[in-house]
Image (cartoon, rainbow, N blue to C red; front, top):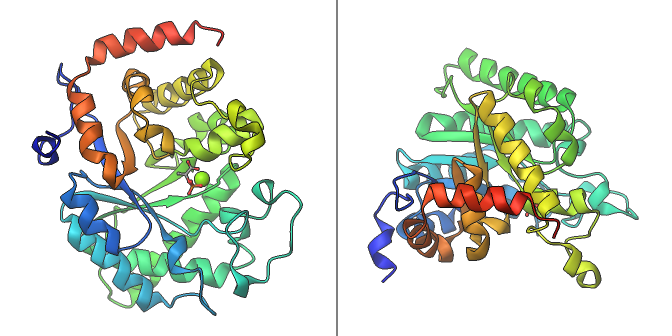
Length: 306
Ligand code: PEP
Ligand code: MG
């Protein structure tokens, strides 16, 4: 029954298009994701390239992996997220100090300036790979505008180096950020001028918004994406990004939960990125929904207290 939806563009019964993309963690997973009906890669978590080894991957090794995914995707978009380690995802060779609150600590974009060589190598590989498809670079855990400016400068410098060396790259490669730290959601008017796209990481966003550790079963009942407070927060984010004519997707686990899908459609997201096994089911579910009924449902949910 689901196979019928693999080749179809994802849309609601009343014709609202919402791209359904895939979350992957290795280049090997790209082919299966696209075969399962993914309309792009919405989140390539690159951490797997960096863990369980003695030193970081070279620029060439990374370039080959990124180019492979872009080759599989053809003209479909591929969002590759730069390294998101630290926190609960340690890397031995970085020798990061133990932290009492790793989720609130030295993680992702926050350690790029200290480990600039590692970050620059990844950006250089991405810039080179951008010549081979529709690559979009995404930065995790951004909470301040200064971080965005620093990143953009590093990218511009690596692009200039490629240009000087006569290496081809996509001069209009898009750069975006994860919305997963609540403070970022209150800077969107500024950041929309400096970024091309946003992807809401509900896994972390909900954890930081609700002050609930996403991995602690004791507080799991409080980790509730259906809390109207969180739905209101999501609505604010999508509306503000769209008011500035920018693109906004969602790549947290919430996207793959069938009972939240009508509310996500109501939000008017441009894309939902989910694990490969639920791509066809998500497309099938979308085809059974009416976008206008979903908008009404969301309006109603936003008036609820629980
Ligand atoms: C998220 O935080 O929602 C997300 C997609 O990133 P990760 O789960 O890798 O932290
Ligand atoms: Mg995250």
